[in-house]
Length: 76
Image (cartoon, rainbow, N blue to C red; front, top):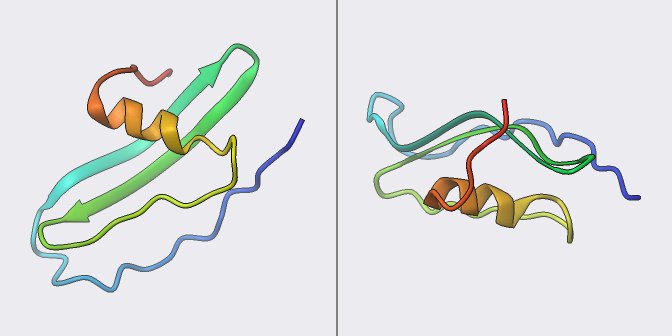
């Protein structure tokens, strides 16, 4: 089974942080059986920003998007 380390936080190079986020995700977790697919993921997207989720196969990208869209509920 592959393990993934948490990447370092990358500072946003967006517009002013005084603009409230359009999307805000804080510490979401999703497990599929014994596998933790998403482990405390947090991010903000502000109006006008481009945002992408990158990672290897099995890293939890689709699970994050499914939770964001409301198709799955986060655990915890």
